[in-house]
Image 1 (cartoon, one colour):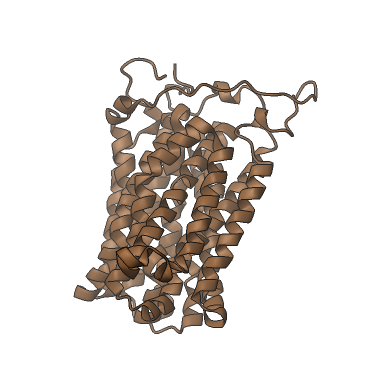
Image 2: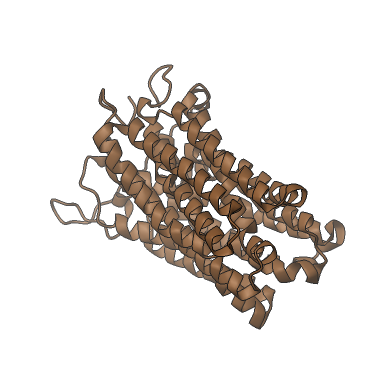
Length: 445
């Protein structure tokens, strides 16, 4: 029998992992995941700001910079499933520690890529692309491991909110990165931004290792609720990943494709939004950095809010309806807001519309990630890695296609195409039914 049981109406029910009261330590884990989320987006967004000085300093064109942006996303996409599988197999504590140290080292290496030993055989563009690819490999473990942690630490009716809080850290990370990186770049040079964010990641890795645990009963601060005595957990044997079952479940395909549409749109903001404000809307380097934070501040609010809403709707209307309503509504409103922001003449109205678009886009995050736990809590890391691979395959196309469309037909057309992708992603929610669980050819392992 599956670890999650669903009533006939599809409402959330109890499972063995929730047989004891939720641990209060889950808020510590969520706080740490939130902080790691902040760092992940500092390390991926800072290059979109430093590109303003990197490109002329290293002689890079828009298309070459787009290739470098995409290299990160390719590495990030290809290693989502291995990252999720490792979190299922090894546990969240060791996987996130190794991942943090790994990508922090490659963040620092970005600053010296042009003079490193890779620049000889690969050239500057090749060296940067290789380093950013390997940085993406490290960050690939982050979000699937977040989902593994939320599934193990939180009861089912809190998982949308939990993953919304954890991933919501991107709002702060991506919001503070443009103005802070722009200020560091102007005053200390673009290389300094990479060194500082690298040190931040390594410090956080040490904190995570000291304070985190794979599950509540294995945390050294855990106490039995009845006796008050410390307890230790029995190691959990992880069953093999049911790839055949995943393949035969339509919801898995639609979830991955829909999240791919979200990924395309998200990477427009991550890679080109700052340069769009500076180059197309006429903002200065510093003012562009300030206003480029606006979409990510909306994400900071909308991401946990959407998670909370989808949990409430799932409890009231059943899992499938609770996830579908949030997914379709958020993606549809994101499409309309982006289209509006792309078409208005006022640069400030454009920022407002595009910022709302980002907010509505990430309003759906809780619905997407909770759906993977709804479908298979046993393999929440692996399945969410598969879904997030779809997002980042879509995202890998975005940094290169976005400037190409803008060059051919202008930025309104380029952003309009992103709006269409969001709309398509919303429509795909009609095929996503997480309340039905995985297609059964027998009991789930």
